Length: 203
Image 1 (cartoon, rainbow, N blue to C red):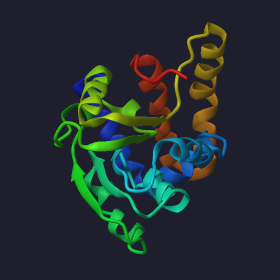
Image 2 (spheres, rainbow, N blue to C red):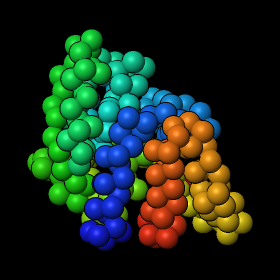
Image 3 (cartoon, rainbow, N blue to C red):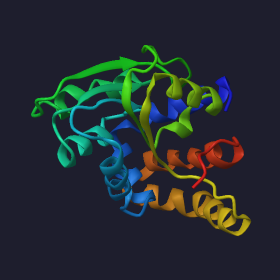
Image 4 (cartoon, one colour):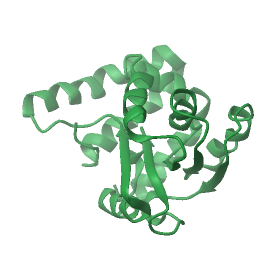
């Protein structure tokens, strides 16, 4: 993505904090939590130590606690401190241990082989350099660890990629505006991240 583009992404993300969850749900046609749950049930197990990478408000981890077990330790990790600041309020009714840390995917400040699972919910696309991000995630995962990515992506198939691109370029901003007004329009940047910036994870 490059540092200049990434700085723009972070600026936009800070501006959309109040509407982030609402718009994510709208642009995924209400299936964001369904996708998260399906992955979590196969990736997180009682007793696990997990890294919620690009955690935002902790939606991935909250579902893990609700649908798997509260017997898990969570490290919330996000480049935006304002997102992490909400974690204490959102998780005050849970009994599990958790830790907060701010940083980027490319320099994860944890020892190698630390985590049973790394969760990336609508976040890996915001890395500066995707390859470096994956190398760091691989480093901190245990040998039998699991990486769960839930995100938009660009398919290999040309026709499918065209329709996904068309949706992101023309319909995403409409749905985002209907869900959150002017702040929702900032989600148009996703199109640039996934297609113009050349990143995005494949589906």
